[in-house]
Image (cartoon, rainbow, N blue to C red; front, side, top):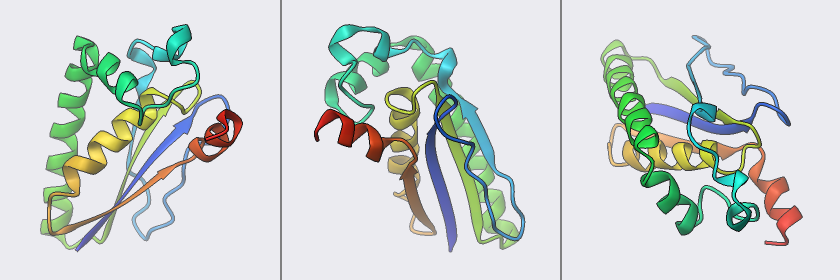
Amino acid sequence: MLEVLIFSFSYKKSTLPFNESEHGGGFVFDCRCIPNPGREEKFKERTGKDADVKDFLMNQSEANEFFDNVKKIAEQACSKYLDRGFDQLMFCFGCTGGQHRSVYFAEKLADLLDRNEDIKVILKHCELPKIMKRLGR
């Protein structure tokens, strides 16, 4: 069984998550190259878990291309980690505020990998609890 840790975080507000497993490391994806929904007024109080933000990002060709690349890396890494008997792998997604893009991609990868019975996904959004509290949700 491979435990896959998936984090979303903010480059401005939090630090890069640290993998304390025996092998350490993992992958870090910088989502700031994708158009930021947070710059549009209608999305300021929304997150990457909300349907309208997901729709916005799904309609960005850059976002689809970005995730296709992430998916290839993740599938290859998970397969090789399982083959080698490793027990943990980490993927991190960062964006400016840790609210929209990083959350969206972390959720998307978690959904994809959770379909594999040899993988246990642990998903953590570093900024989202604070954001939800600020938004009154």
